[in-house]
Length: 320
Image (tube, helix red, strand yellow):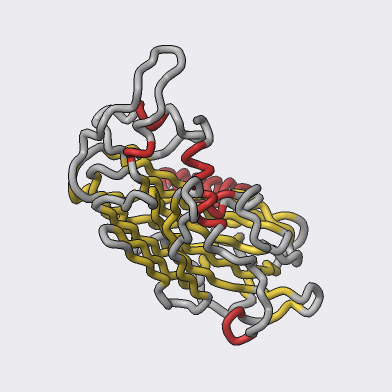
């Protein structure tokens, strides 16, 4: 039970997302790194539902995906829908469900991108600073949901492996965020079966806004290329699938949800990488040619010199 929800979310994404690094269409996937034969940058958007495998025949999931920037991947059932679209530097996901059919117990979407980066203008190691803006609106009804976002970097090409890196979380995390939309007033019923802690918990209610700014750093080596990776996923679950589970210790079963009506995770306008701060004099080259918002940020030693200089100026001003 400890890993059930994480496994479901990972399975949803795994069954929809082919490997990063498909190279059959250079126009779609971007420039090819001649040293590896893999794309230097790519986007991927997907949506799917997930059904039971115990029925005969087993449920065949609905899936939709695209590797074209800005194109929407969308699936819909009789009472649920999920969609995603991706741009380099931004992820956009959406999921809505009133209920699920007997064979379907979850639906969700995934948005992912990566871009190869080389930073020059210095020697040795440096620190890059990242700012991400994440906005969304959440309605919490009877279904419950999860949302996860991750920004990170890797010296290794991000060929798809969501089993060891679930929900797009990269090897070297820079910033992350997770949210639980609990269909219970007391979210303990769901927190007990989550494998990881969450940043935000929302209980039943409508039009609940999420507005948060994420900050993170990455220590890079001048002249050595790395991949900047962003991923976001959302999944809605049928809470009735949990009501069959009872505690061995107490005999208590998961009760019916407190929430009623639809649950919506609307993050169709986020997350956005709003700025990248580099040491003074450093320059970043992006394989995609995307114009990210790159600014200069003094290194700690330079900050110390600057503050010392300001102190001297203040002291001199007092003397005058």
